[in-house]
Length: 235
Ligand code: ATP
Image (tube, rainbow, N blue to C red; front, side, top):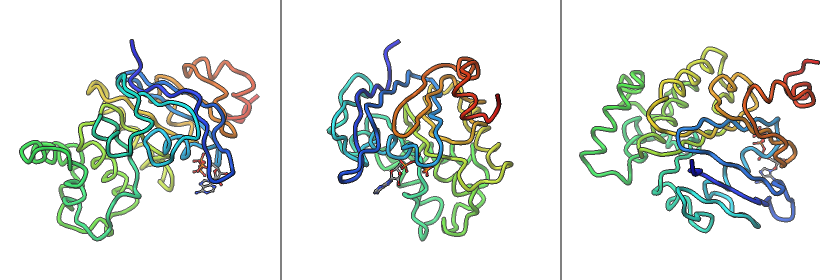
């Protein structure tokens, strides 16, 4: 099967500081790919350059068979990439209005039915639909970020450390959310340092100091002694 997302030779960073070194990555339709990496490994940098928030110094990104690395983020979103981030949530706007922004490219009818679908998926958002996003708890804000990203009917949902700042219970909720979307033909690319996310992964990359040092299944990862010791803290 052809890759939905295919990135090759990605080099980038900030000013003179190179962070990503020749990174390559592929996500096929419906796959759930987890990029594991510790603090500062370059996960956010990788995702930002895939989605168009950070220009590449060199390298290519293809999405759905088309080169997208010269497009801005809105062009990539229109083609079916979604980036789940709390940064884009507007604190002063209501839950509903934040969702409306997520469905920006949809027709009015579609917007309405998508919003209803999201309220079904996330009842807590329905309950609080009129309230300002600022009043949501950390976990609810993640739900809003996920729902907002899903409003655009993406083919690929890119999540940057969804577990950051969440209690173990809420991490389980996020994992359940990913599981519940199985079968909807949405591919996931999740950058995480929490190995619990391997539960939902169909394939794993390990990013270390801006370099991809592993690409394989969870089983293969667990059989890889060096990486197991480094990431699972076991001998
Ligand atoms: P974290 O888990 O801390 O978010 P990460 O794997 O997402 O880590 P990045 O945020 O991509 O890592 O950061 C990789 C490196 O790039 C770090 O050394 C960080 O200090 C540096 N960096 C990130 N953003 C900037 C920036 N805007 N300007 C300069 N350096 C940056």
